[in-house]
Image 1 (cartoon, rainbow, N blue to C red):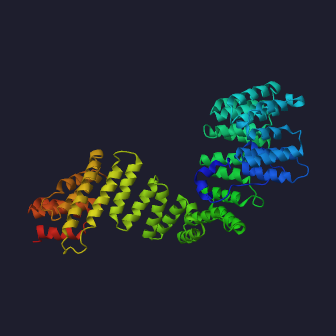
Image 2 (tube, one colour; image 1 turned 60 degrees about the vertical axis):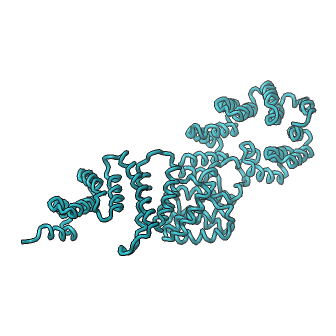
Length: 550
């Protein structure tokens, strides 16, 4: 289905497993030819087949347009069949003869003569015949198509279909301005030429969405029953994230009684995207009764459960969907919904597995890399977190980003810390000891990059202090001293200073001077701690030693 391009975005992920939407023509609805002219082939085919059953329909015309659909879909045998059926219904309906000729036009050296043979009598003055021949030549010979376009203009200078053809030819060459002028000419000669309004709007749907919307609204004013316009309108609204208006437009196209399951699933998806969850849920439940096997409805139901906070229900629906829908039909968002639901229910291992599946399908989702990193940290798998955060940095494309250096540095720091034995009395094995030093040095180099970019911010200095404290756990060398001093100096200038971090800085410095037996300097820092927290137990104990009560 060419129209309703919302299926190229998130909506396609929801509806991927469903068939193409088709709506049968109702009284007052567009006929099959209307759908065909805007390349809504499934809708056109359904409507035309229905029309073929109507005794009052023009069988030659209906068969011709069915042939055109199959020809456009490169199904030559089916196209020939319908052209022949059209000729049998009315040999004088020349368009079917043109259709028959164009099926093998590229390999038919007598085609030009055959076309000329059709241009006799009243046909010689009929621009529609020339237009049909021009369209036949469009895929195989632009010069010939242009020749017949000019002939069409000469016999029908005010024929709207001539200018629609010209617009289509310009559009095929990506000449939007010229195409628009031609479509405008068509509406000038026939203000009721709906196809021209539609194609004009389609042409501007990306470059000037509001202009396209205005054109479609003009078309709707011209013919409120021309439901095709609402589909294009919904498309444009969706592409511009105007979901509420997309829902409103699409609601005018469908009917809960007569629309197909796929169309109703599409409408439910738009309701979901518009955060009209209750309406979406109600519609999904109603349509599921008609089509319990619908993959589109199953995934919308899962998404709804997640977005409404029922994570266990989302997992239940997703697990069931996994047994009913082949993995080849799963999309990224399905795995993401499962991953996030597992994460919300503290099933970390399962969440990690689902994030990995999602990233296998779309490795550029930096947001998913970040979420996966969080799950690795929950598992205390800091090596995994390092790999993921490095991957995210590479894909981000923004060089020297302090926040990323800081995050990766923390992961290295935590990886080093995780190697320490849980029991402080146990010695670390040499291999782990070497690995820890390697991790700490990597962390320090990353934090140093942070300080280079953000010299006046405490974060880089603070984490360098922690790294050097880990490299000098007894504080005998004072490796962390300059970094804690810098951190404290920066925090003291901040009116919103974090007292916890300051206490850590003062504790290290107080202890460092205590080890050096520099009691006066040591007391300065313990007093600073007590000024922030008068009940700080360690500071009080140390001060009792340094300044015993007389």
